[in-house]
Image (tube, rainbow, N blue to C red; front, top):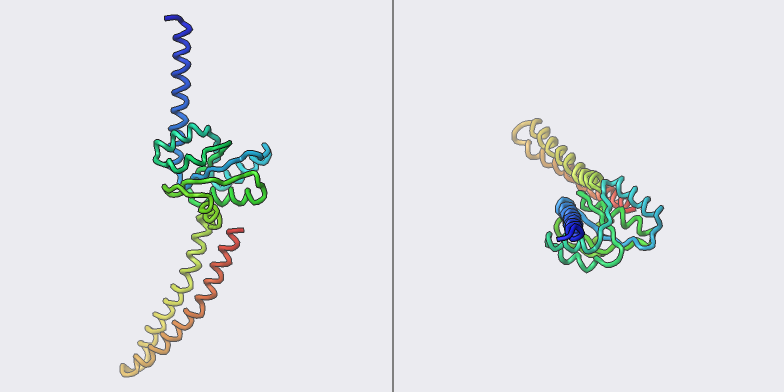
Length: 214
């Protein structure tokens, strides 16, 4: 066997090993990310791609470019075969442990840069289409959702605490025969305050959601 044949065989083995390493990398990213979004960047300038990468990095989103054939093999290994029909053209892939961050950043960028096309994605282990990605883009980030949740819970909890205190205070006054008479009006007043606060809190939550979507 000639040296040329041996060298060619070694080169082929090196190429195969390199390809397998890339597929393994993609598989790991898909498995360890709560969200993966496929987008086509044909038509974006180098400066625009750089800007997009910077915006994604600010939200802890990784932005990678892989050959479609490598991603197809990774889809076969991970069971995400439904993603393969989106693997046409020059694609880039956004990975994040935040389920909404890639969709939010990419969708916002696509509004000003029509050349960026959102295709499909994987969110919490399920393949989703472009419409679902756009819906996810309207949700706030993790901190924003926590803030909204606290806003929803804070008023009812504080009002309930006041209601309990009012009942306790009422029971502590007067003779035993009049305890219920004193407790009930105080509790009813506190409950009415809770009902009055609920619409205002809901309005605050909606306002925060609208600000996050912008």
